[in-house]
Length: 227
Image (cartoon, rainbow, N blue to C red; front, side, top):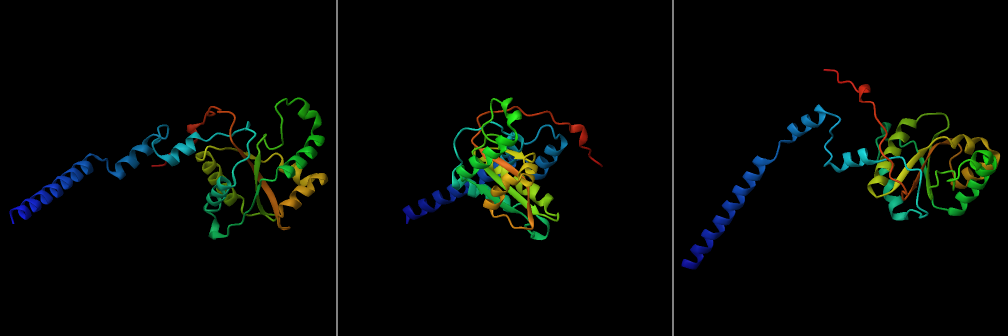
């Protein structure tokens, strides 16, 4: 009986100690509302201990890549993050093609080099038309318009997810005209199996970065709070 009494006392003491510690810890934590107000007081000092904000503030456009294709598993995660982007009425108006086929990329690159031979002679760092990336993501939207805003949000999700996985990206719009207008480049679009009523909106170069560029200046004067 005495042993049972001592056991009960010890159990109660442990429970009380744990409760007191929990209350003490809770009192030392800043309320969520207060923290939120503080982060909005100064957009120049974001909460950099937040993983999402770290990814946003740390991502850079990469134009130099290692000669190492991205693993399918990582590309699949990035694609899933992309298609979970917000989009109007959940229409999901995009078509995405993730190109791993190195022969296909090399073939379209040869066509690009022939068309832009003079320009490329001045570029000693040129490897391929995708900013030298080993893989490329092609984002398409309806030919008659619509879906561009949704595709932009999809692309941002993808690029942030890629950055968080140690990958670099660069959004490419300049080569779209070449792919759409050059007859010798038509095979590339055909190989992608893009629906006839869709067009290439932009591409995303993706790979392991071989550079760490500094952030470009941002103009915070363009942000106004209306109170």
